[in-house]
Length: 335
Image (tube, rainbow, N blue to C red; front, side, top):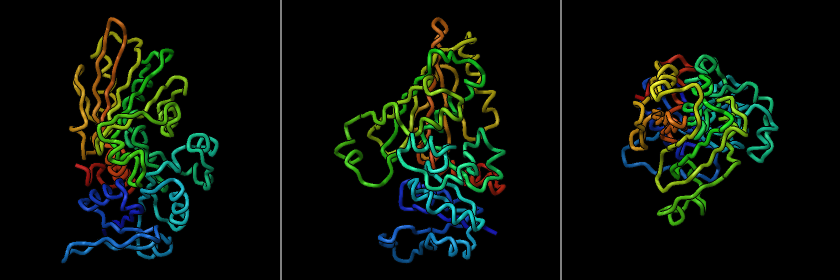
C-alpha cells in the first residue's frame, strides 16, 4: 500500500518543493493539511483535480490513515502540531528548527523564544543521513537540519574527525543564500526592490543555525565564525570555508579525507583537488557538491560546498529521511 504523506505548510517554498518530490515518489500519496483558517482554496485549471485536503486536527489525520506528516512551518507552529500527531502514532518530519537543539536553554539563546514542548526534545533525531542513518531509520520525530548547517557540517565534520584542522586558527564559513531561504512570508528585507542589484550580510555572529554546526561537527563557538549573506537569486547556497591545516602535506591528502568519508554516499559529490562546483550544478537536486584548494607553503585550505537550499537544504533531505524511516531505497523520488 502507498504511504499517505501529509504536508503542512504546503503553500510555502519548502512545502511546494515537497509536493513536487512526493508527486513523483512511487511509494507515496500526498495529503495537504491546512493549518490556517484564513487561506483561500487554490484555483486549479479546468479538468484538474487537486490533492485531498484535511485539517491539521490529529484525529482527522489519523482517521485518514496518514502515516507521516511533514511540517514545513515556523517553529512555533511545529511545536503546536507535532505532539498530537506523535501521540496518535503518526511519524513527524519537522523542517523547522523547533526540535533541532537539545535543551530549552540553547533554544532560548539562539531563537530568542521559549520552547513550549521541551518533553519532546530528547525524542527528536537530527536528520542528516550521511551521519545519522541508523538513528533515522527508527525515528518517530525527525528534525530536518537547517540549510546552512547541512552544507557546513558535510564540509567540516570529516575534517574535524580526521584531525587535519588547526583548530587554534579557527574556521571561517562565508555562506551565501538565495532569497527563498527566508521563506514566503512578505517582508521589506526580501522584497524585490531591496534584494535586486544588492548583496547583504545578516545575523552576524548570532545566526540561529550556528549551534547545529557546533553540535554536529564537535566545535566550540570560539572556533567557528559564520556569516550568512543574501544574494539576489531565488535558490541555492554556496559556502566558502577557510581554515589552516595540520598534518597535511598535499591537496591529495586533504581530498582523501572526503573521498573516504563519502565513498558510498549517493548525494555527496566530491570534485578533483583545485576544482569547485557552483550553484547551477546543484539547482533543483538533492546533491551537496564539495571541492577544495590547498596551499602547501602556508597550510591554508579553502573548501567550497554547494546545495540547493530548498532540496538538500529542506524538502529533498526530508524525503531522503522519510525513505530511511520507512525502509524505502534512500534515493527514491530524488534521482
